[in-house]
Length: 159
Image 1 (tube, rainbow, N blue to C red):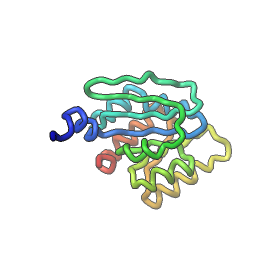
Image 2: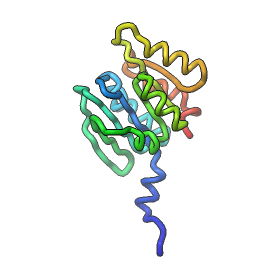
Image 3: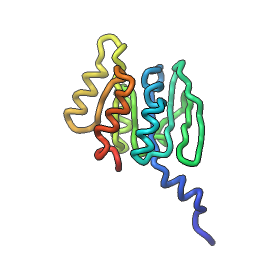
Image 4: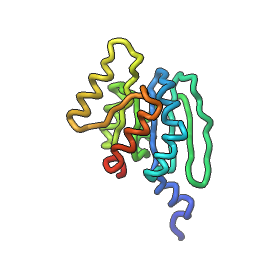
């Protein structure tokens, strides 16, 4: 009996990023992580797959697959656990549930704070968890905010 095919070995070895906005919408995050600049940085860091969970958002990037990179987009699933387990890096909104789920799996985590929220407890949570060394955080204030954070923290994020 032969082992796994070359295609299946490559799929397993394909470094991936999972992005989640939770049950709400966060169009700024979706637009930022699906931007050309961010995709180029992800490729440069060795990632070959980006999975976007976009919730109720209006920004809906087109899924695509090429020989060097694939982008998968969906709104909701019953559970994000498998996507989190499969990912090498998680980029998430700053909701407590999403943060804890990623951290429970021991995954590197970049949290993107939604600055449009009133009474922003997300920022407080992200700052505290960053201070304790659990994650990196940023905002989408500048178009390249997430991409810049990935590049600045490249050594820590290449696992």
